Length: 265
Image (cartoon, rainbow, N blue to C red; front, side, top):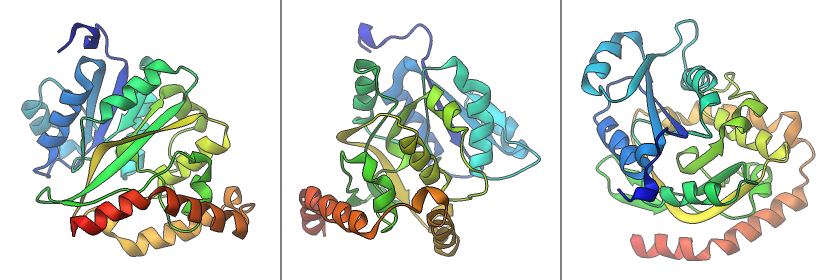
């Protein structure tokens, strides 16, 4: 590792909520170590039944028990972030079946260079369980269009490819635990509404694994929660013309990505 990449004390908290059953977890951990280096403190949170085994398998990581009183990934994430993030400059989380790509380093660089930024996001590479590339995510620098695009079920960025200042998490108050699958989408909408400064880093920063049995594959719950979110007050003032305009601009901006998808097939 370069001398300039050495951090005496980690300045970034990374959390992975896991049931401790996925074979992909070692790859997730390796990607965080390789792309975050000494600047990251990686914490695993898991059920009590997996605590001992994970601590033995990953002695260099902190492994903490998920909350007993209420289950759910966002409850687990809130618990760890609220407890630890105050001691770190940046915070993010990565699922146990996803992993960082080398482009994630550019997210660190962007926040380091511009202290006025509150959050940065890159693009995500969607892969299969066998690690076959499915498609690249379409995204855009127009982060203030997040809500308008979400109204059309267009996701501007995914949490795997994000990095934020810890103070932003506390300012928003964490993730809304009333949502099982899309609390992060609500968090981003609230953060943007708060005036937080985001920046788009046009790089593939993380890989998102699409597979059977994962929470995000529950389309019924996902659709219910999207409809619920879009009925919240923060979405009430988005006009149809704005939604249509932002959708068109988004599509035009991502023509190169769509062409890649065609040639990938």
